Image 1 (tube, rainbow over the protein chains, first blue to last red):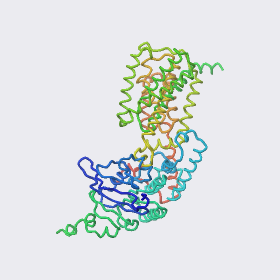
Image 2: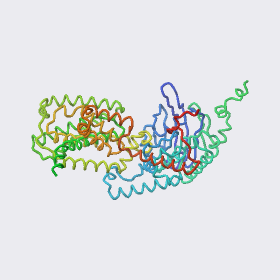
Image 3: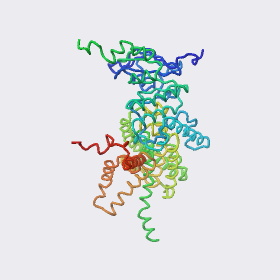
Length: 264
Length: 310
């Protein structure tokens, strides 16, 4: 049996992450199936972004293991994990200062450049062709997020919502198998947010698997097929968004105890 | 015609040192553009300088062959140093590189068979201004091509946000290693150019004075585009000559004053590609504000936000 026969694309097994005396992620297990949109939700400080950082290799796990397509990735460096086909965006938008919109997305295409750094330096005909192809890919991705007409502008001069869309285009540049979106709709109004939701569904329909950290419960019910709820770094509930929200533990985590609210 | 010749005699030395200092500044820029502050260029230059002096003096090799060997040996030195240094955090790297300069001076003083020791070495060959200009042109072409290539894009990403770049598949270590190698080769060339311009080198030639000149040139010209360090090196080299002619009273502090002014008012240096994009965006905002578009509002964090609202 090859790994592509199983529905599981990505898996966390008993992952623990400690920062000094603080346990940010505690014995968390989670699976993401191929071709789905999976939500990772939880209150502020629940450890959602830490999980994303562990998956992409920016943090090392304290114990436990992370598997992508059946292969362990928790011992790999971030750029190796990216090369396996995991791409991400950032909660606070981390675009590169000084780069134009097109250059940002072109940087995202680095893995698929199809030529060596040296050939590119020499400017061989093949390297030039590949460079042009990457530029076209980048422009196509910008069209997809509706930013093609801003390609030449300095990305840092654009609005927050625009920067978020550029970041998604950049993350798609490597043609990943799995896309991690860390609060993609933060700071957006409802219309902008549903546009992102539409894009997410289009991407899923084209075969991409998406893991989405989201704060907004109503967006999760709208966008995600399955979800995992965590609090204090621990698993609280998993399943469909509906069953998760109906779970009394989840309601307590988000809204507090009813008894407290009534002042009893 | 005569006036032109007079001018040439008066300023050809300044021009030659401008070209040499440009090479030093580009060597430093190579690592600085990967987000590394390192003064190891001085050590690469010492390797290249003494090697070139020996090649031409002892073995009688022609200038260009000696220069090429100096570049290769500088590159070799940088490979060894990078392997040791890339483990360090950036500020420790800067400190370690300064320590290395101190150590290499002692080594130079105590290996008289290679470097002439305290006596220094006389270099029998002099590089013409034209030859130095050709060397700088070749090195500039390399930086021009690097900037236009995938390496150029990757190194900018690494400098601005190494962690984010790594999640795009860019290995910061690989990019920084290449940056060090280029710095080593160019540093070796700079050392050879220095040796054949001064025609006398000693332990003090490759010491803290050069380190100061090259960081000042790079900061002055700007470290965000390869042309910046060249501009900076020429301004910085010509400055003493200019102040001597115009305002001799301040010539001793002119370098320091210019450096301070630049750091306070133009922290990104004279040549800054980003500034153009920012100006363009500001113009567009102004334009749409004039057109009465209500989509454009004063943004928090802009210069007007400092004014209190009461």
